[in-house]
Length: 309
Image (cartoon, rainbow, N blue to C red):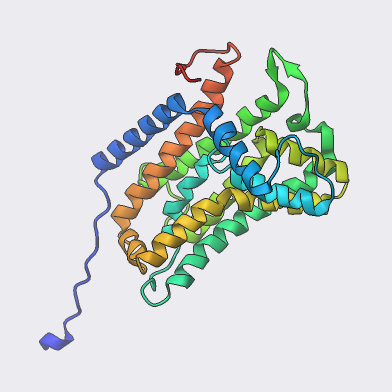
């Protein structure tokens, strides 16, 4: 056999060593707990969220009544964007890693296609859940705990729903992170698109537990219309507003780097570390914030409180 006939040796990047994977997971978990301790809902909900919504709409977003379909749908998108950094939405930042992996290999020649592909898959999973919940929410109305003003054991019923929903979502994100690191079985191994669609579904699921005041106002408006189609459309716009900023940041990074960022993330070991660390950190934050810190505010258990909270 001549030298020309010898097969080329392909370079295969080794997966992260087990010890390193565990360290990444532990550091991600520690970062999630620390974020839950330091988090200021007053800052993100009121200072940032309210001011953004008021500025974009040109009036007091909370106090001004929603009159008409156009006003309600505009409010849905703007309030979603304003709630980008709330505790009931910040975990969507973990989608950056999976989206990078689902972008495809041809990032140099077609950066726009590499950008639109993962964003489209994320939106597909997200809209499937948010639109369905919007329609169901209008049909069920006040029978949902999320719209209830009842209190059980000193805790508002709507926050009990939040605690359950975000606890489940947080555990799902944590599992996906540990699986990406190779510490648990990965059902999405070699299926990056499936991981992104699932991330989108989890982001859409944020609405099922969201206690954000402006979302509550939107929900009541949708129920008052009595039209499930309006509910589906309003909740879809809310979710699209939720991911707008992260999508724009992802797009800028992809375009400015001319695909180099996606090629950098194409390294399996690097992708596993970045994706796993983000998912574990934000998954643990979601569980700790909603299932430990929130109950502690009502005297159930204990959690450290910062002076500004």
